Length: 315
Image (tube, rainbow, N blue to C red):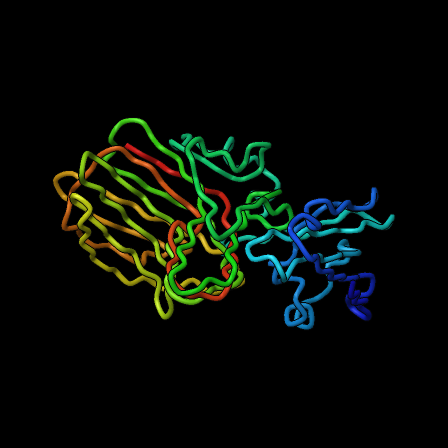
């Protein structure tokens, strides 16, 4: 085990790294009784490059980082050691325009009128969206130290992927009926963007052999909204560029899909309009939404991103 002890502004912070020879050894690892299990391997706040640039978080006192470099796609086990000087905590990060009044509030319960769906990742079943999701070549976890609606958010990570790999790591929620006016909104923080284009959110309408999806894709130099209509397994694509959200800070993203007589797609980034365009197809049907990294194909460096305060209005 390798241990780093920090001084000066980060005095009291300890980072320890250990490797395991097998997944079995990792699985049976037991933390000391005074430690709290915590995943920090993919948390960029604990990397040297970040620590040298930011002030200390005085209530974070000791952190141990344990990982396996020998076993592909195995989740790491992390320890956070708490001293008597105080509780472990990070101050909540707010997206631009967020008010202090929102911090620590019950986000979903406080919305009036209530949306058709709300997820703030704070309850005991925060990862249960009522429909089967996926975690192929990646991990979904709850982060209690970073949020826009305290205390928790969703963290999504993928490992290094190779040519031919397809990562699919997401939560899914299905709706009843066949709404034709749907707005999906969420807070997003890109901690570590990988290579290529990753779909981060999808609004999907499905009816018989036709699937109509609006996908929010992060791919440098621009983000994109992709309008994909698949008929009998044959897709057609229309692409709309959108500003790329900056990494390392929270952003609020919303997308509205209006079908029917005048189909239209509108989107905002941090409250500012980024897209307002007609859609070629009005194909509707049963609705479901996906959030995380529903699709990432091919070779890529690791991804790490956070989501919080998810709402869906459907009419």
